[in-house]
Picture 1 (cartoon, rainbow, N blue to C red):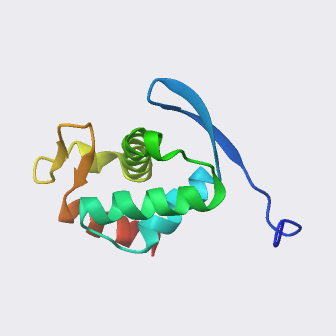
Picture 2 (picture 1 turned 120 degrees about the horizontal axis):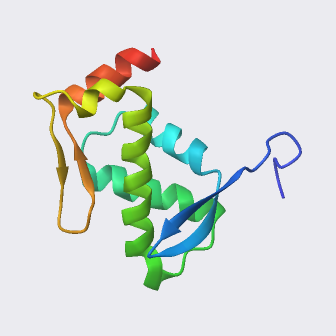
Length: 116
C-alpha cells in the first residue's frame, strides 16, 4: 500500500446504523475536513463520506448510516475541542431529521481561533 510505511492507519470503532464498525483514520479524516473550513452541513457531510470511502469500504446501501455517524463524530470533535461552544446561547447546533448536525457560524470561528 503506497505511503503505508510512513503513516500508520489508526482504526476507531464507532456505531454505524446500530452496528459497531471500524473506521480507518477516522480522527485524521475529521480533522482534515475541519481544517477545510467548510460551513455548509451538506458539504461537510459529503467531504467526510468521500474521505472515509478513500480508506474504507462503504457499501452504497450503508452510505446514509455512515453519513449520520460521521457527522455525529464531527460534532463530538467540535464539542471536545471547545466544550463551551455547545453551551453558548448564541450558537446554533441544530439536530435535523436524520440526526445530522448543522454547526453555527460562531462555533466555526471559535474553533478556527482555537486551532490557529
